[in-house]
Figure 1 (cartoon, rainbow, N blue to C red):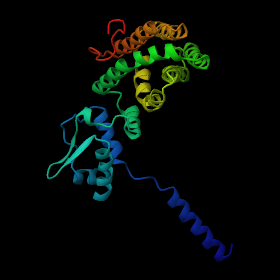
Figure 2 (cartoon, one colour; figure 1 turned 120 degrees about the vertical axis):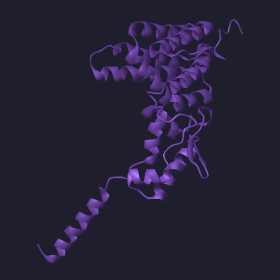
Figure 3 (tube, rainbow, N blue to C red; figure 1 turned 90 degrees about the horizontal axis):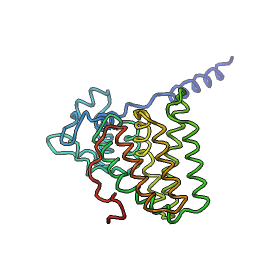
Figure 4 (tube, helix red, strand yellow; figure 1 turned 180 degrees about the vertical axis):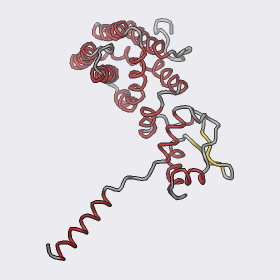
Length: 265
């Protein structure tokens, strides 16, 4: 091998090593996990910049850049001379894609976050099901039925982890299809935004439920009510599904502001 060829090999080797250099640790991900899991509660101060620099072995500029990610989505606020404090849940941009991604990965152990998501769904989804019962087309009904059949094929007590994952995937698809069946562009888009948070509750409740067959039957009642164009029954069936989710998670959903029997409104 000539000296020239050797030099080319050396340059390629160095470039290859540079390309494979692992990314620096993410302070934003570390703090998001700590906050969403409940280690830091609203009102708590997260570690100071200098402590994060030392812990992660990165410079102050990098730490500030990562903290800015959390500030921009409303999770923490910077207080001059004191540090960074976790804001109240109501201040979080919960539908921001970055926040929903963190939520899916890190929020499982936090009952307060679960309660907030469940309360929102209990207020919204019965009305979505009721609207779908009025507007669903034949194509919408096929999508809902296919998702339901997928849930049934991969019922959550199956021994295979892959089957359990598929059951949750089809469960999310079932709810997304109902949102789409409203034929309202806002509801349809909202189902995509909410998908990570819906998946969070579904995957956890499917793990903890003591009666997956009963849960499947509640979903079937929603599907049949929409198919039969019975809005009130669809509303109540969707409520029953979410109440089952609350029971499986051990969460008290509280009194829903919007999600009341439409016959009593």
